[in-house]
Length: 101
Image 1: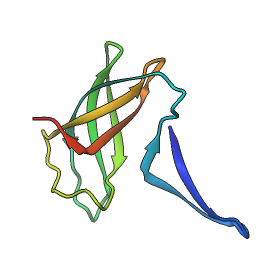
Image 2: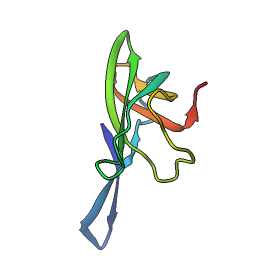
Image 3: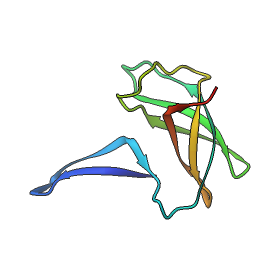
């Protein structure tokens, strides 16, 4: 997976990885599917949820940190848009701001 890294240009040793912001490059060929939340641990244990999706005919399970700006509580069984890289379907992003009904 690829993530945004934020760092201080005057002190590059001072950095952090935005785990709630995985990225897919614009040059990468992608497709979309539906992701279903399969696990939401108590916040005290983790800020990540686990979801499943099918990409390229294979079922995958991934975890992604929830952006603190997500407007609603996320529950097991909720469905959201997932974008994945077609030549590497294990690389995916679930969009918590794009629910699927």
